[in-house]
Image 1 (cartoon, rainbow, N blue to C red):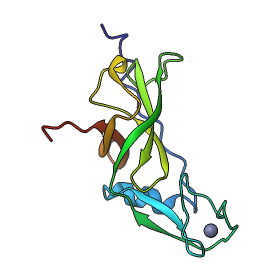
Image 2 (image 1 turned 45 degrees about the vertical axis):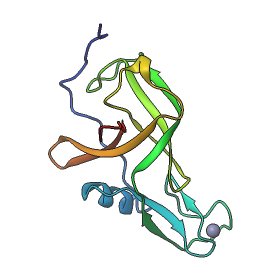
Image 3 (image 1 turned 90 degrees about the vertical axis):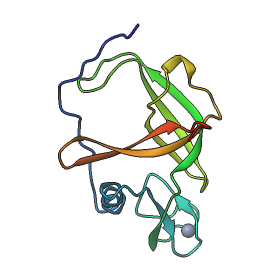
Length: 142
Ligand SMILES: [Zn+2]
């Protein structure tokens, strides 16, 4: 039994800054970009102005494969924010590249989510001009 939807309201839009614009420009093209330190090569997410390993301000980005495994997750029940369906699984995904990424999890019942489950990114468009990454379990059937 579903706990019901509070859908119908528009999804909140992400805050975009100069540090995160490259990421959202990638998402708009269905690409998952990870910030990379030019000086030491460390990957980091979420994006920020300085490298936490070497403090360099020089960075570029790489394109992630979009594949990873569930490192941890929560199932949100309350408070019910309009535009989301509940129960609402949210995963901390460890990407193949080694960085971790928080996003919605779809395609699996909330009580069937497991640590270590292989997942893959997909991009959905809840509203015109708004593309968001989310993850879905990878099935053997492909
Ligand atoms: Zn660095």
